[in-house]
Length: 435
Ligand code: HSE
Image 1 (tube, rainbow, N blue to C red):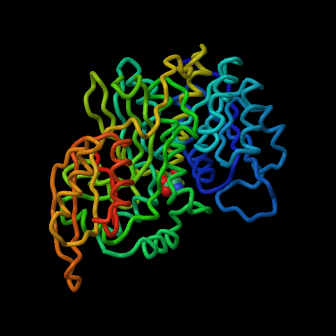
Image 2 (image 1 turned 180 degrees about the vertical axis):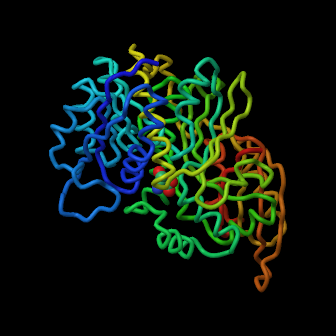
């Protein structure tokens, strides 16, 4: 391979990912040069404050002059996070003809279309493998490897901190608050923990995955979202007893047209019961995994570290190498396809199974009344288990598993159950996935 001129690489952000990206670029310089056919020259690292003590960065590379750094670069790596000024910097980089590599999920989930349009107009590349599930290659498989297939469904554990919390609750029987305290101690949670535990982070990632999988722009506000904050020790115990584990799932699914509406896609995040035999049930601690079902490929599973400086830097470096190779080889490179323009369907359209737990009066006719409520809304019961609560002679605990039912029908059942004089309390309603 004849040697190309050195490619100037600018790094925006000097946090844990930035530090590892800089280290790998510098330490692996010779090897990367051989792989790419051009030297990758780290020309500067943009920081907000030069006086902050930073380990691992050559001092002469640090700069606050972001504008000059961007204008002189062939490839700009954005690992600073947040919407602004990251968006402004990325637009500036693209408009100056630089390729951009970003790990910024919140920016892509909210302003991705604008950024991709600009990239396409100016003929620059926008790579983002690190934005979803850290080190796990999932963007490239969806964009390229499965580019000739039809994705039917994606079911992923894409938030490591909530997976850690749920896993600890499952394995040690501790409460959500105790598990959250542990996750905080380990530095797993975002600065604003609600981004993790309320499912916002997973929703951003789901929007990005669904956009790629279904060639359809998915605005973040169309992603249905429930977090894990209402998961109780009792729900965990019941799940264990029945052979399930509770996981926070991001699901992107193609739904055929049916009597309740047209075809489209559902993009959603919620905690669900997953059978212990399902591959996602074995994803422990802060690990991530994405299970993809495609028409021709069948089932595929991608597993690995969803966060961490070094691991995320690996995904960033892979994108840098792709961008650099394009510079060397020339040509337009990848563009995003959002041609399908599928309808994004409300949660009421999905069909899944449910586990409903009720505290009921232990009297004749109660079970019949409850069964009637389910049948009134067309929801078929698959299993019922009753136990009498110790020390409360007149209260029984009912656990009802349903066959496939629509979310709309199940919501109507729950509303009626809450109003029923046979039911003292609707203790838990949780969806079941992966059956
Ligand atoms: N807060 C995220 C997580 C970090 O827990 O997975 C990686 O996006």
